[in-house]
Image (cartoon, rainbow, N blue to C red; front, side, top):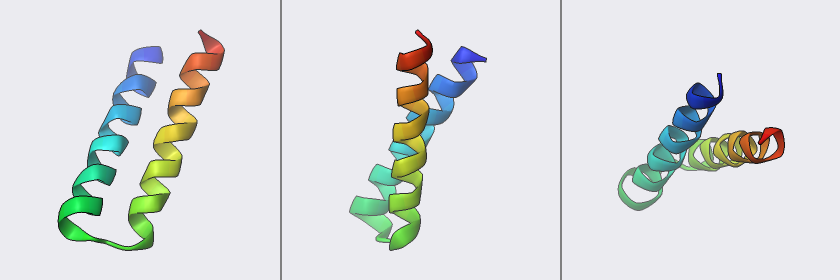
Length: 47
């Protein structure tokens, strides 16, 4: 479960970066960033 959460967080960060710099998809990018940050924080808190 921890690996899946980490992979999802990295994937969301990559999608956010692509959208922010290439596609400019608007608010969807910020939503992906928030999900990625939450996933990373959960991984750090759960250790």
